[in-house]
Image (cartoon, rainbow, N blue to C red; front, side, top):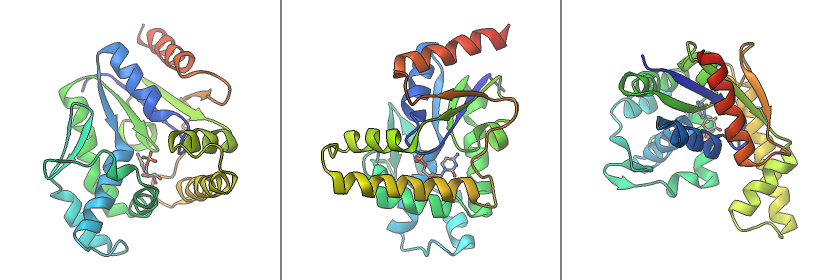
Length: 218
Ligand code: C5P
């Protein structure tokens, strides 16, 4: 196995941006494990599979024609990178992610990334389940209001108070589901470094993670 930096944290904590920039800076691969759960949800929806039918969803996911190419997420060779970012798909992904057989089906797919090259992986259980041997484990935190504001800006809805309240509500709902589910809940493992991104820039966060990696690899 190649070296791994595992970055976990709640929705909109900056994981994706920080992890992909760290990967870029180090010349490593980037695994967006949330995208795997999202694409699984989209695939189940496209195939009309009942999201609560664990057996059928896990079987479907096991043979999912997914690939990650040039920063794109591809399903059946179609670029679905934007489709999977929809809030509806995020919610479905969160439900699918609570099914143990689905998590099991996606486990090897994720571990295979580190068989091919060093990898920066982001998600909810990178340090606790998928890469417990990771060289560096980072747990990201950020205030829920700040995360909702970031998401609203991303969606171009920063000045709409009603939309903001809805985004905040969705983030809190997803946090609750991710922290409280029975299998692989979002958790900070003891050996993880905590990084609160509420009041720092992306550049500062990236710099910190790389600094920590330089320290631990010695
Ligand atoms: O990180 P992102 O918001 O794209 O993840 C979508 C959903 O997938 C999360 O709400 C979470 O429930 C699930 N997920 C997970 N384990 C991971 C990554 C994501 O359960 N490693």
